[in-house]
Image (cartoon, rainbow, N blue to C red; front, side, top):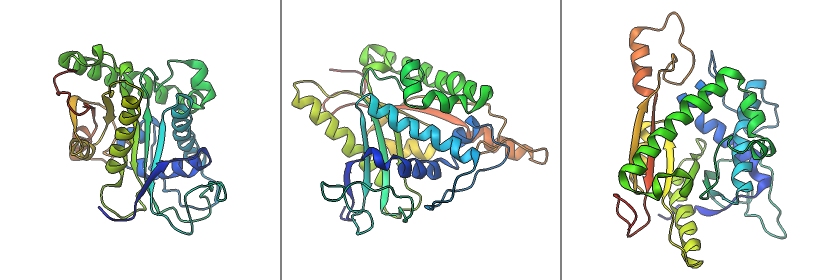
Length: 291
């Protein structure tokens, strides 16, 4: 597909802008709003120097901690972009830019990949603090932390453990797998399937690195909370391991229901508020288990 997209590693100096892109991409996704216990929707954050509101800043801090977490564990943070005079690729003579004053619609997608044995949560308090994840979780308040750590992540862990055991993969343990910790399409970018293409590239490059060291490619898992995501990931070889519904008490975007919301609104939200975990096996290894 010749649309000029280039895939590369993201530089840490770009994390602020990538977190903004992630914020805007996840803005209508129910669980991200539900985690923050919102009573009204948040606004998009444009590519300007205007300071974010406290709620926007808290959400940005949450996403920035993801980038730090992946980097601490020597994972991969990659992006897809269209080269331009505004955002040329970083080099020795052209250091990475903070994209805070220019439009970022040439950045098409962002992917975060955690290596095996790296925990994506608060399992290691020291790392959670160093990366900013623990302060970001504390910023959600007690109810928000419970929703993230107990309800949502608890559902994910149960689903993936059951799915892996049923397929005899990775000894039934998610820590033995690669994890896609984020796969985001920039809503400002118009183009075809940049996020899933970047994810494919990132995974294949990781697998090539494992094989180059004499190892075997590691299966990859992820979770998603939108049905459109399920279909997109299935197109690049992921299969569903498990699915669960969540009783959020919120609307379809995860914002607290109001008194005037109808029974139909509640039913739509109930159908929308679901979680999936998915698995992608390396080439030559069947869906039923590692050969």
